[in-house]
Length: 216
Ligand code: DX5
Ligand code: ZN
Image 1 (spheres, protein in one colour):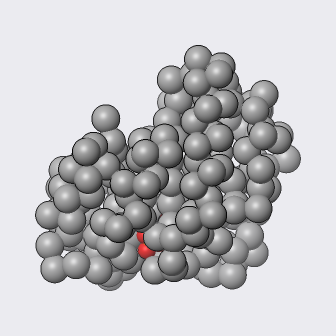
Image 2 (tube, rainbow, N blue to C red):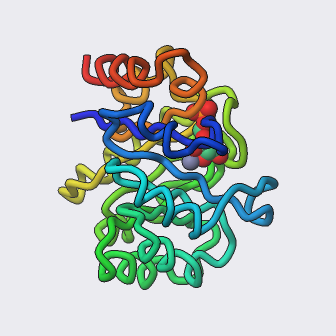
């Protein structure tokens, strides 16, 4: 079953509650947290996550593009995130952090930038509920999908199958009507989409369209 997680990075930050309502039917709402250190952009933190979690029934999928996730990620669970993704490149102790996130009651997920090989983390996969394979360099919405990441998505799914893991495989960056089918075919099952949802006149219809395409 394909799941769609619209990214509010491409929404109107002055109207976040309305923008969440605009994607009713989405499985998750993807919240990009950037600290202007791990990535060259700055977005929002726990106060906004907390307010948004109260304003919508859609579960929040927080993608932390920040330094020191070991220190900050648990606070995002407390703020209401139902899934928290930290970056492998930034985490000091990813196993301990994943266990802490799960103990607090959220799904634990780890993200890989395009240059980070999935094979490095094969032994850690059983600790995670989801792996995020970035299909752009993190930091900005609206970038072109990197199709050189398709083999990595495929290899990630093969490693999960090899270990008999039921975990989810998320893709984020440039996911649209023209790229989602290749991602699904490669083994992804959770799809983040920012500009291809919020850049349209009817975001809810865009979510339905993407889901349909991913499941074909
Ligand atoms: C980029 C963010 C993405 C971004 C995706 O660093 O992690 O979640 O919002 O935006 P699109 O779908 O426009 O590439
Ligand atoms: Zn993201």
